[in-house]
Length: 68
Ligand code: SF4
Ligand code: SF4
Image 1 (tube, rainbow, N blue to C red):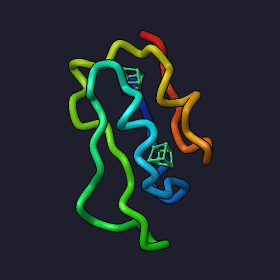
Image 2 (cartoon, rainbow, N blue to C red):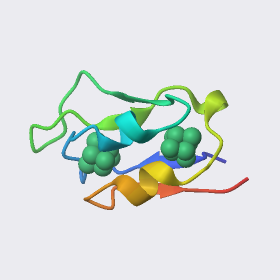
Image 3 (cartoon, helix red, strand yellow):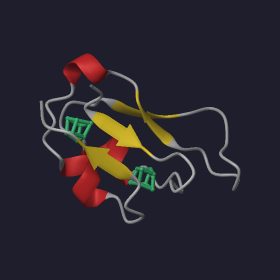
């Protein structure tokens, strides 16, 4: 099961989640979503500790975090 699911269509590419992830798991994609934003994605899933910080930071509620 995925630890973090990011709804790319809700994401506005603000990078808050990328900056606040304590394990540097998230990155910004190089392709835009349908609204023209570059969405965040979970680039390094193995390093993710499911802490939930990214989900709490996201102003657009685009991130869902699942505990193992
Ligand atoms: S759950 Fe925590 S470790 Fe995993 S991507 Fe989000 S902020 Fe990073
Ligand atoms: S905090 Fe939310 S809106 Fe901002 S880049 Fe991350 S997923 Fe996208």
